[in-house]
Amino acid sequence: MELPNPFRRAVVPLSVEELLDISFRRAFKKPKPVAKRGDKILIYRSREISRIQTISDTLVSRLDKVVKSFPSVERLDPFYRELLDVLAGVDQVKHALGAVKWASKTISRISRWYISKIGWTDDPDRMAALRREATGRISSVLKKIKPEVDFLRETIPRLRDLPDLDPTMPAVIIAGMPNTGKSTLLSRVTTKEPEIAPYPFTTKGIIIGHRDLEGVGRVQFIDTPGLLDRPLSKRNRIEMQAIVALKHVSGLVLYLLDPTETCGYTLEEQKSLLRDIITSFSEEIIAVVNKKDLERDYRDKFDETRRFLADQGIGFVEISAEKGLGIENLLKVVRSKLGGGGP
Ligand SMILES: Nc1nc2c(ncn2[C@@H]2O[C@H](COP(=O)(O)OP(=O)(O)OP(=O)(O)O)[C@@H](O)[C@H]2O)c(=O)[nH]1
Ligand SMILES: [Mg+2]
Image (tube, rainbow, N blue to C red; front, top):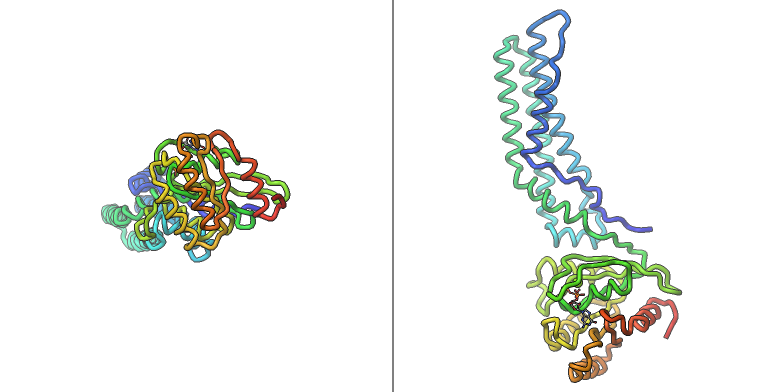
C-alpha cells in the first residue's frame, strides 16, 4: 500500500492572462438569449447579466479548483510537509492559496452586486456601462493576485513531481557528498535510472527505486541530493531535501565515501560530514566505500578510509557502484540489517 504523493492531484492554475482570456471569450461568445415577445429591455438585461455571470462562474470555478485540490497543510505527513517547506515555503503557499480564495470570493461578490444593479435599471446604456464596470473590477482583482498565481504555477508542478514514499515499507537512504556515486548505486540495486554525471548536484531531488530482498520483501531505496560539509543554516534547497529524508524517513542509511577524491571533495570533508550525520540523526548508518575499481591508484586513501572507519567503530562495505563490484555483499548486509537474515 503506497502513500501517494499528496500533491499529485493539485491543480496548477492558468496564468492570470489565460484566465481572463478564457472567461471573457466564453462570455462574449454565448449566443444572445432570444426573447420571444421581443421585449428589447429584457433582451439587453439578460445579455449583460449572462456576460457577468459567465465570467464570474468561469473564474470562480477555476480558482476554487486550485484551492480545493491542494491538500490541507495541517494534515500532511511530516515528510511531505517539510518538503513543501523546503521547496516552496509553507507560509508562502498558504498566503498564495489565501489570495486565490480571496479573489474567487471577491469576484463572485462583485458579480452579484452588479447583476442586481442591472436588474434595477431599464436603460440599456446604463446596463452596458454597469457590465463594463463589473468586468473592469473583476479583471483588476485577478491582476492583483498575479504574483501569487505565478508562484503557484511554478511551485505546484515541482510538488507534483515528488516521489511516492511508503512509510510502511523498509527504507534504505543513500546519502553522501556530491558526486560520490549515490545515483550510480541506486541504478545498480533498483530498476530506476537516475541521471548520473561527473559533476556535483546532478541529483536535485529525492528519487525512489524499489527492490525485493529475500526475507525482507519490497524495499525502497532512496537516492538523495549530495550534501556538503557545512552547517544546516547554510544548506541550499537541493541539500535540504536530503536532510528531510534523513530526518523523516526511518530506515537504514548508506553513507557513500569516495576515497579517490575524484568527486571533488577531500576525504577529510567526507569524514567530517559522516560524523555530523552520525550525531544529527538516529538512523543506523553503514559506510559504503565506493570507487573500489580505482583502488590501485589510491591505495593510501583507501587504507586511511578503512582505518578511520574501524577506529570510529563504523561498519562498512567496499564496492564499485560503476563496475558492480561488492554489490551482492552490500545487499546481504542490508538484508541482515533489515531483519532478513544473512551474515
Ligand atoms: N570509477 C568509478 N566511478 C564511479 C563509480 N561510481 C560512480 N562513479 C562516477 O562518479 C560520478 C558521479 O556519479 P553519480 O552517481 O552521479 O554521483 P552522485 O553521488 O549521485 O552525485 P550527485 O547527484 O551530484 O550528488 C559519475 O561520473 C560516475 O560515473 C565507481 O564505482 N567507480
Ligand atoms: Mg546523484
